[in-house]
Amino acid sequence: MKPIQRLLTISALAMGIALPIATHAQENSNSGQATAPPSASMTYGEVRRIQAEEGKITLKHGEIKNLDMPPMTMVFTARDKKQLTTLKPGDKVQFTVIQEGGKMIVTDIQTAP
Ligand SMILES: [Cu+2]
Image (cartoon, rainbow, N blue to C red; front, side, top):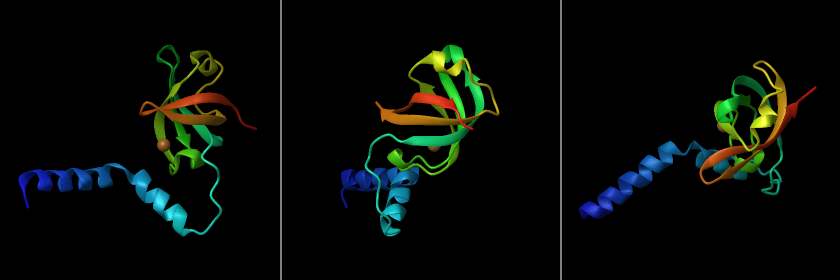
């Protein structure tokens, strides 16, 4: 094996580890359920932290179907910072998130009943 091939193999392996999303997608296709169209859909979550001035919000979210993302707690960027001003930690929310330029962008967020 040439060094360049070895390097490519290693980075491919590293990516496999760094991208659990890919594994998750595979699990989905094996479940035999009808897959939803890859359009943005509402996701449920709970607010953990708000950094309104930076437009950042930390959410403990449920499965994000349109991004094939399993439930987790993570930071999102809000498209409109103003949408964060009415929220506070502990709020149950419904939101729409899209992936844009490698960032997770919340395009719409509102408190859920
Ligand atoms: Cu996530």
